[in-house]
Length: 480
Image (cartoon, rainbow, N blue to C red):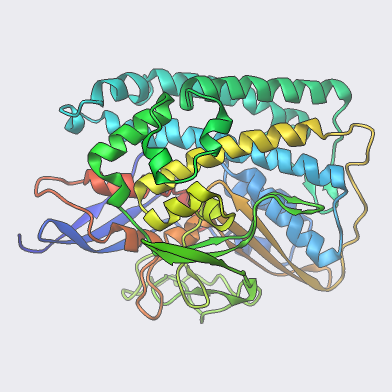
């Protein structure tokens, strides 16, 4: 087959705008170029403001992961001021953040990723009828049940955060509101109800059975619930071998507590046969703008600028910057977290690296997060202090490094004269959907799309849809 170019996009079931230009040769993607076509500029809005304004403004970047943005801003201010949240404040912040991430994962599986399997193109597959019944967009029984369960779960954010999205509850020294004993009981009851949904529909078995899986053979044998239905389709379509990225995974570590982060920070570097976790030095992060419609030189976020190239130079092709760690692209997300945390199944999936691995790791994280939330809620002490004291410095800087559902999120603030002198954000989809850098290295999605099969009559190839959605992109966060 002769070479051709294909522009795929805009994508439905994706938050924000995304286009992917494909160079196709002999029925496969030879090269891919991911474009985030909408510039927003929240970093520019923050300059010159009171540092506390970041707590109000940055959650508005996104209506899906607003607590992640809120936590990152609060932690950046905490580092800049030397503040530490009280133990119960840190616990409540972890519950708020964990609930949002858990709801996000469940929504992605049921509403964003699985509906692709109900497409008519798969009508000849043995699992298609079940997919149609469970996951047809807006009509599937799984989607309806998941939305109802998700709505009930999010009541916890109302109890602890006052509202969702865009709560102001998380502050540098804790959270603004202490739950009483009746509210603690209500939170625990809500989590028990959500566990029943997960075990009845998604896993078809106790969550602990899924978290106990120790490798790919155990995963292959799982047949229960909607997770089993996904694994059946993934096996039939060869999704384990589709869409592998750089196999270099970054995690800042999730849910800080006084004794340390619940999941470990680090960088997992490997290949199809295995890998190892290395320590993380955030000082090695730089954002490259060689292929972005941005002006400036590669810089660490403390020194980075957000200066759009209004001429949109032809040499560039995206508003997204290209984050790199020690000069290399990194994939972030649930797969990265589980591998860096050294969960046996997560490590095996990281070596596999493709579409099945990302979705299965997200399932693993759903089960683990639910269990963590139950433990944290049981440890809430309404009699303790949930908020400490903090005073912002006239001059200082700080970084807020958290794990949103889609991956590593960082906020870097520099304060001068009591005002924000610089604010830079590197979001998960900025990592995953970055364009090429000055050395020509593709971003994780661009690399994952190389080799994807494309039929001659496909305008929006199914393989590309599966790969893109396996990353769960949020493009409004990408260009914040």
